[in-house]
Amino acid sequence: MCGIAGILDFHDPPARDVIAAMAMSIGHRGPDHQGAWIDGPIGLGHRRLSILDLAARANQPMASIDGRYHVVFNGEIYNFPALRNELLALGDRFATTGDTEVILAGYRRDGVASFARLNGMFALAIWDRTEQRLVLARDRFGQKPLYLARSPSGLVFGSEIKCLLASRRVTARIDAPGLHEFCWYGTTLGARTLFAGIERLEPGHHLTIDRDGARQASFWRIDHVRPCADTLEDATARVTSLLEAAVRRHLISDVPVGVLLSGGIDSSAITTLAARHASRVDSYTVSFDFDPGEMAKARLVAEHVGTSHHEFVVRGADIAGVIRALVRQHDQPFGDAANIPLYLVAQQLGGKPKVVLQGDGGDEIFAGYRRYNVLAFERLWRALARGAPALQLLPRHARLERLLHAVGAPDPGRRMALLLTEESAQSAPTRLLGADARVSAEQTDPFVRYGELHRRVGPLDPVQRMLYTDASILLPDLFCEKVDRATMAHGLEVRLPFLDTELTDYVIGLPSSSKVRWLGKKWLLRRALRGTVPDTILNGPKRGFGVPYRAWLRGPLLPVLEATLLHGRSGMFDPEACRRAIDEHATGRVDHGFLLYKMLQLALWAEEYL
Image 1: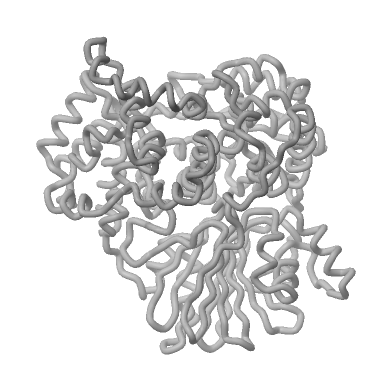
Image 2: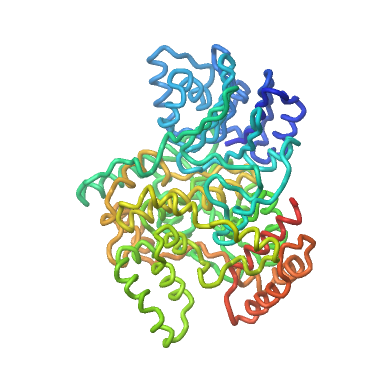
């Protein structure tokens, strides 16, 4: 795991000190080595977190044996030993024992077609000295970030936005469509960021830039996965085998590997399977001072498989400073407070170990959310939604009302969006913005990304549509973003076995009937783990890793909330609307937790960057 940076400019070549400054700005991502390479119009920078082949020979930027190609790469390729053996049989020779040189050799033979064969997480840049061509690529689920800003004569790129700002070629300006998306979802979607002129390379895509311009294409799309009609018995056995193989692959490392253990099904499965294939496994669990969460279940799993177990407690009084630090780490406001415990665990570990496995991805691949069960009976819920006015005679239930308005939305793209946000179309989340910011944001469509995706997956059944949507939007834009920033802030690499290429190619192709049964969630995964994970865990109710930010907004975060929204210098907010929402939330009359947390994030970001 590392950080990458670079500038390509055919008219104004980069200077070495600028490339060094860009790499230094993301030094937290790789404390073990900094490298830079300049050649005419291209400058490449790298920060290394040494995990495979710890020797200096594996430092980056790295050149191919013939000197034609140079690469900077962030991530891990779990199938690189098999790819390396294939290349050796074809006559290639290697000077290192890690995965970076394998990427170079594969690209040297097959070009951009080689990216589809990489089983892992990656963001990379490869420069072809002969053709004067730069290629950027990002893994299929966006586990590793890659930002870029284009210019008429090239582009600037890097692992984090701060890296682009350090180039002195990019200025910080707010993006109105990005602001509107953030107000709805707590993050921006797809290629969009909150900075005008800065974009993300989308997952599963590569971008080629030369003197003729830029060309972007996908090398993997979820809707191109081939359907599979295996029987339930065959699918259960196959998932059991594929998941164990995925965990085994994700353990490849020249440094110790630990596990983040929450006590839920996903992390318990990863921990149990890791313990089968590693001589020693250290597991780590987080809880909050007034809510122990599932710490007891995590302890049970740790005892069951014999890990060396460690527990940490997060205290509300520590939170304000952590949130400010995370805004600087994300370079954008970020509405998922689950990044807080991840950040604190990574901080506590202090680089020992450098690598941990985690259970993210299981819900999105195996249908672990209640909305999948709702969509299995979409016609029934839509019928209820048509009768929603009659339900006003019953006691208010905010979550049910929001659900009915979501499933009743006539536009299918908007319907998917509303099912994935805590906001309601009845009350726009931009209502706390000041007039100028609100008008600018509301001139854009916050549902456009969902509409684009629906046009690709519309023919599928409702459950499959939502699974594809989650894997295409929720995973890269929220969960992978959260995991990468919160942990790489302290040089901790997090690996997600549930996003293994072989496992996901198989499970995605299975029909929704094998994943969702009546009210059961992750039905196939539970079957596959029977006898591996303790029944206490498998049979227990799902309890998300709930961060008590709503309570914090009534307690330790209330003074910060008032100072930033009511008296902050950004001028982005309507003080009267904010005062009303803060009071309603503080007294418990209305739960505005998600909205206020997003606005707090936005205010802190504006103070820092605008």
